[in-house]
Image (cartoon, rainbow, N blue to C red; front, side, top):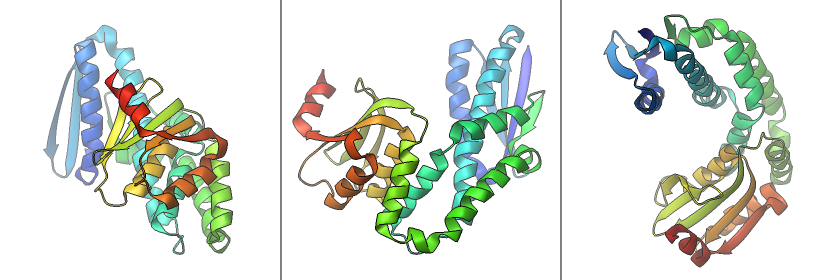
Length: 259
């Protein structure tokens, strides 16, 4: 049998839960076993699988850890170091998400190049002691933004920069379909498979919508909505995604969802 242990600080409980749930689904497919326990401020996730599946599990774990670093850890780094006090909440979250997604594949390459999966890994120790080059890369990005915070306080300038960043993201989806209906905002792929949903009553839902659209990195965006869709958000999305975004009749999306 092959065994491996992933250790995370209990301060990163949401990240550890994400890792555990992803491994739980993967283990179902390949007859592995995953368990978790907490001890002395640390959360340990233990994986056991057949020896013949070791490489398959290592490949999955490597992608899982690189995604964790490039999403959760990078977001926390941006939140702690980005200083843009003059931006409104929607613009700031959109800009942060664009920075989070920008050059993502290069970030993942650095993580996986430094990653070694022997018997166990402490994710925080790996991040702080092995990924100084990655943090230096993020530091340069944040420094450029902070040095130009006055320049970025202009809405026109910020929108142009957001448009540039979004246009240069590595595409992850051909089309994202967004539907707002019955108190929900739902994100679908090109075939109307549900990817994610949020409640309209959620705090900062407009920020959530634009951040998710940037994170999904689509080539095209179709938004099916009624008259109650935030007009300011519509204008911002039109400016950022330009000719790649379409606003369509809500009834069309409902018919697609039923079929």
